[in-house]
Image (cartoon, rainbow, N blue to C red; front, side, top):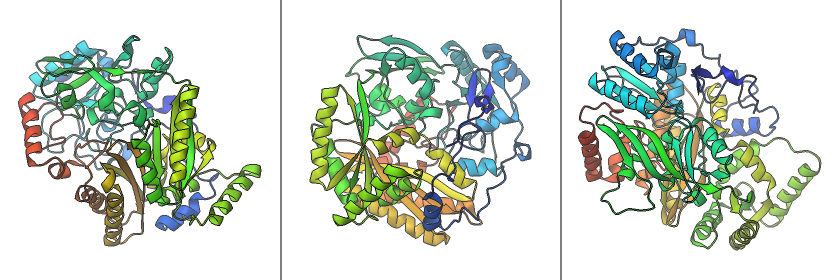
Length: 566
């Protein structure tokens, strides 16, 4: 990775920063492979692209975009400016483009290619819940559409205005609502405004000795409200839980007032309103504040690396760990393809380290390992010294029973350093005409191996159909007592019809999920991208109940309409 030369290059409106319009993250940060000698050979073998011969695409030029004009009437803009201030209302083309899409591959291909059928007509940046409430009232009175916006990292189409929408569209950016308001030390609860970005809220909590413990891949550029709205999961969910476990209370601005879910440990008050809001993607209102459970910063924290002979042994070990008395913070294992990718993205080792790595590989071959089937695992431990030692001892015994081999904390340190950087690799490849995207599912332990095989088979058939060499890889993460998440990455070089080819592959993978007994998404949400599989996932009656909820609570269709269910 290269470091930013000037972080103010990120788009700003007032005090709110945004990612660059054409890719992930901020200007000046990007992936490079010159210090990673295994990367170019890996890419050539995996998808047939020679990075030495391939030319980077010309940097996208915003001036070439044809951005639809705002249709917001002057009197409506004046009303919004009267609420949030003229400096916190934006109708310029750049602001509206930034708020049009998330950061999926589909989003980036379209925005870079100028395929912008519909943008929000106005962006508003309220300062507090009172202003959010007034904006909502004004928008509903004008029969406008409201789309809540956090960090803009969504990859499921949850932010995208529908191209056929004729009403005025308001993107309600919560970026100014970014404070930890209160920490209840006795209860381990914190009240936090919904627009707080991951690094900002953790810095505020850490300053008082606390952590929320929620670290999704998008952590650096996503918000608490976005995590709640899409039912997010973090890298340390084995210890801290998914966002649905972490959220205890909510404040949601709706047309008729404020929905308040009090932060109690548990309640028997009918169907859970809290659960209705979690994952609702803005369709039930605008989340302004969340009360979350927080934990004291751990005394010790370490990520240890292990190698397994193959994926079968690794999955069996992860299942036994989940069923055991061990309680690690992270249990992750990459399949052989992703292990090869991880090794290819490592910097060149020298001296003693290089000798040690060569010796390790020779030792594993001597033990009869096929290194092309080897799987890399990361397992994390947090807590007091005695606790972490006991947890690691339990895990080490399980690993050994399943033919695993520990290689210490060194690789875990590197994993920690680059765990949020993968989207930059996606953009590096996209610059060179390569589709690289992700899709994830969850299923019971008994079905995980079958899901994994089904996805590989479906992806291979799709690559053959589009006539391109493709690459699929996967890791297991987010373990539960009954099953786990499988997270897949797929890549191929674009041909003449980038989005058509992408759809062929993505749809094949999604269909394989539900056909093999998995869910359509574990933590990225539904949005527009995954809605076609919702009925197969939750049943016809499940869709009917969900549709009834949205129609009853938002009869005018003002809150992010057509997301999740049309």
